[in-house]
Amino acid sequence: MKLIKLKHLKISYLITLVAFFLFSCSRDIDNKIEINKLITPDYNFSNYFFDCNLNDGSSLLKLESFLSGFIKNDIFQNTSSYSLKVFFPQNDSVDKFTISIKNYTANDIFTDVINELSQSGFDAVASCNFNSNLFNGLNLYNYTDKKQNISNNAEILRCSYKPGFNYGTFRISMDRLIGKMNQLKIQYGIEYFQEESNSRKFIWINYFYEEDFKNNISTQWLSDPDSTEIKNEFLDNAECIDSKTYRFFQI
Figure (cartoon, rainbow, N blue to C red):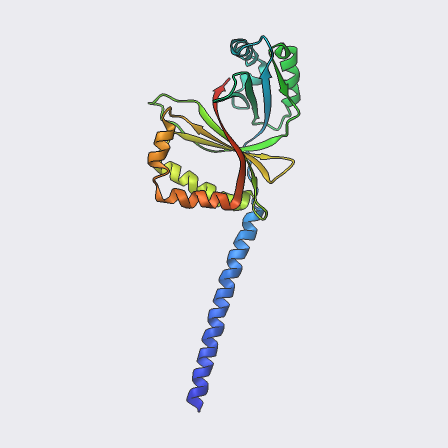
């Protein structure tokens, strides 16, 4: 009788012990998820995107000539503080483009830049929607092989986090992607932009520095067994509204 009671006590103790560890592990996982949600990006810069159209009678040549002169403005002489990119949509009319102004300082230069554009005669070349939302951004990854010719292809994705997810939960997948890119040595860059007024919305830009990037990505990235898993993690965290390809130029 004592032996049976002893066995019952041991079994009861074992069940309690297992239950305790299961509960503890579950609680640790939940805690990690909650802790990840509290993580916020350490932004590198602020950024505005302005969608523009060439005016009737204007041309890309006039735009190029204007921007070549405008970039000599004192604001942009310090390239470590400010930069300007122009994105032209591929497979679209050539009269549309997007201006991206990046600011690595705490100074609010955007109003000054818009005023300077107008005073320099930009209104005669193109029209832009300057009522854009402010984004804060991160340079997540950038690798180029200086021995090879650099291409200027880009893909811009507008996305939003699913309920219960944010940058903190997404960061794990980002780190896995960046680690894999480092291994594969694909000439590639990533920038992440989060809308300041709405933390659920973000822009993801892929930079492809090789002309045959589609073939290279297909053979290296898509054939890698980890790529599907990382892609699924991305889809768990966020959904993208649209994706467009561009040719970009650093002015």
